Length: 292
Length: 217
Image (cartoon, rainbow over all chains, first blue to last red; front, side, top):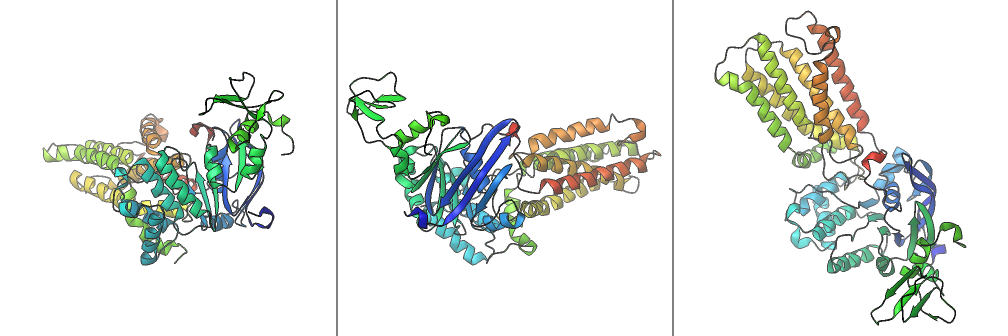
C-alpha cells in the first residue's frame, strides 16, 4: 500500500476524553487510510473509547476529528458520517426473539433503507457475506456466540458502508470461527476502510495494512505492521535457558527460549515479529521512545 | 431508497413493537387490573375515596411496568445508525402509549362509578407517574441499556415522597378536598416536566458517565 497516495478517511488530532477524574484518551492523533487498520493495545488502553468517538457514539472533550470528510461534532456532520458508517460494538446486543434476518432488516430500516424489496435484497446479501444465509430464519437466542457476532457484523455491513469500525470482533470466538471472521474482514477491507480494534497481534499480522498502538490513552505507534516489528529489531534473541532480565522470555516449540529485551553480547538474534515490536512498545515507558 | 423521515416512522412501528420488552409491563398491568377487578367482581361496596385509592394503586403498577418499556438490549448495536434517537423513541412511544392508554381505559371501566369519580384528575396523576417512569428510564438509557432498574425504584420513591409532602403542597389529596384542583395543577406540571426531560434525554450523542463504565477500554 502506498500510504502517501492513499485517501485519508479519518483524521484525528489532539483527541482527549475524561471519565470524571480518569483520563481515557490524552492528545490522541492519527490518520486512517483505505484498507484495514488495526488498533492494538492492552486492556484499558482506550481502544473502545477511541472507536466510539470515531463511530460518533461519543463526542470527545477536546480535539478535532474528521470522518469521511465530515465533522461528527455537528449534527449534520454526524448524520453524514452515520450514513456511510458500519459499527460493530465490543459486546453487541440483540433482540433475542428476532430471527437473524429480522434483526438485520430492523437495523437496515434504521439505516434508512426504506424500500422493502431493495432492503430485503441487501439483508440477504450481507447475511450471505458473513456466511449466515442458512441461518437467516433462526431466532438469535438459538444462535451460538460466533453466529451472533456474525449477525452483528451483517448489521454493520447493511447499507454497504464506506467505513467499518469493528471493536474486537473476534473476541470469544473459537479458532475456526476466528479464521472465518478474518476471511470476511479481509474481503471487506478491499475497497473500503476498516478500523479494527484488537489485542491480538496475530490478527494485525494477518489482516492489517496499518497499525496504531494505543497504550494508556495515548498513541504509542502509527505505521505498518512491518514498522512495528522493526521496533524490536536487534532486541529478539534465542537462548538455551530463560533470561531473567528480558522483557519477555518463553520456551518455544523447538525447546529453546525466545527472548525480547536488551540482548547480551554475542546473542543469536532472531527476526522480530509484530508481537515482539508491540512488546517492546508497551513494556517500555513512553519517555524512552524515540522516533515515533 | 435512503432518507428516513417522519413519513417512514410506520416502518419502525412493527419492529419496535416486537423489540419492546413487554413482560414487566404485562405483569404490572395485570396486578393493576387485579387491584380494581377483585372488589368489582366481589361487589364490595366502596366509597369514592376508596375507589380513588384503588385507581392510584393501579396507576403506580402501570408506571412500574412502563419503567421498563424503553429498555433496549440492542442499544449498543444501533447506537450509530442514522435514524435519530428521538425518532426511534417516537416509534416506541407509538406502541407504548396506545397500549398504556388502553390498559388505563380498561382499569377505569372495571372500576365503574364513572359519574361519581374524578376520573380526569386521577388520569392526570396516572399520566404523570407514567411519564416520570419513562423520563427516568430515558435518562438512564443515555448511559446504559437498562432504564427500568432505575426508573421503577424512582417511581416508588416519588410515590412515597408525594405522600409525605406538607399539606399545602400535597399531591395526593382526597376527592372533594378543596386542594384537589391545586394538587392536580402540580400533577400536570410534573407531567409536563417529565415530558420535557424525556425529550431532552432523546438528544444525542451523549457522554457516558464514569460510574456507568465498568472499565476504560
